[in-house]
Amino acid sequence: MLRLLDIFNEKETTPESIVEIAVFSLGSETDLFILSGHLGKVFGNPAWEYFASRRSLFFILDEGKVADEIPYKLTVRIFEDGGGFVRLYLDLSNHKFDLDKGILWYRREFSSALTRFLEAVLETADPEALKHAPGSDDALRRLGLEPERIGGELDFGFAPGSRLIKVGQVPKDGRILRLSNQVVLQDGVFFMKSADEEVLTELARWCYREGVSSWHLYSLRRWLERINESAGSVSKGYTRDFARFLRRVNRFILRERRFFSGLLDISEIEPVSEFSLLARDFDPTSKRLSELFSSRQEEVVTAALEAMEKLSVKQERLFAAWVVLLGAAGLFFGILELLSPGHPWLWIVGSSILIVLPLTAYLLWARLSRRPVRSIGDEVKLVELERRVAVTQDSISLLERSEKVPDQMREELLVRRRRELRRLERLLEDERAALNNR
Image (cartoon, helix red, strand yellow):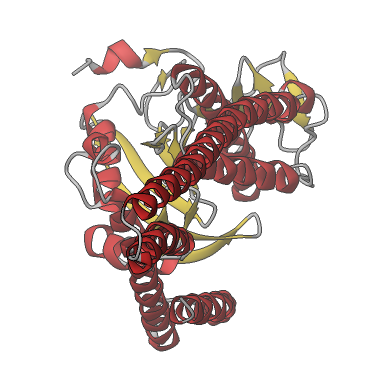
């Protein structure tokens, strides 16, 4: 473990406190009520709070003193869009220390707390192994997480880097974001003259936006790499995962374009922000990814058409062979009638067998081959829909009885769950009707 002085620098002018924010992703979306159930067993009951008009869960992960000297508090906030952030608060009011970069990744107590958090969310001691484990999607959904995959691999974890907010000192140069109770941005670090919780919340909101944008940019690059590596083997699962990813990023961009801060002037830093980079890169990159998928799908369609052409050629050859067989049989039985007259029944029976039997067999085979078969996959889909209906019904019952969720949020969540229940029940009825008609 690094010594304290390897991270902190002793200076004459030091901040009163430092806030560090690191962003993470758990999937494409999160069921906060289900997730709060098993996280509450580890970190205590969460606080249900609105943050920037988003429903969120707030937990205290850890608190204590860095190297037995500097008090700290590590908290986490989780949103329904599958992301969240951890916030490290360092109290330097009684110390003459400062730091130039974040320490979340350099201190054992912090990194172990973050690891423990991921393990608790995913209910596994080896989150990396979960990325390739069979059945992991169903396991995560039971925990309230909708998985997101990139090229078949689960995508979750912390975005690279973090953001620092220093309270108590303001440099003379830098971008001024707020005149009263000065807020200045310099070299990627936010500086505040004095603590203001509303301004800190607004800065945390900005940091979350930037962290998620950085995560999505990284994921876009990973998608390009995976598609190029996969050559021509693009599966249906790849296409579904890719479509889910594009929808998630598109929703994020549409929502964050409406971002407005009444406390900070971000007009100068907006054009060079991570979000602006994501918005500029998303359309051309997603178009390129879609073109790659389309070309791979065209190859699949071409292969299917070639297979159908081969089947058609086989059928034509089968019909020609049957005609030749009939001609040969007619000739054979005609000669037989000339050599052995007086036995017309032999010719009639033999010709009937050669004509009727192959034709009947072919028609029966064609009918059976076109008839939809009730496959094991259909049964599995039906069972899965029934399970999801039951889970949603149980979730609604638990939510109606829960006293931990504020009334307003409970009603909002109940509306969403009841709407989802009606959708699942319609799908279940349609699937049962389709199976019964087969």
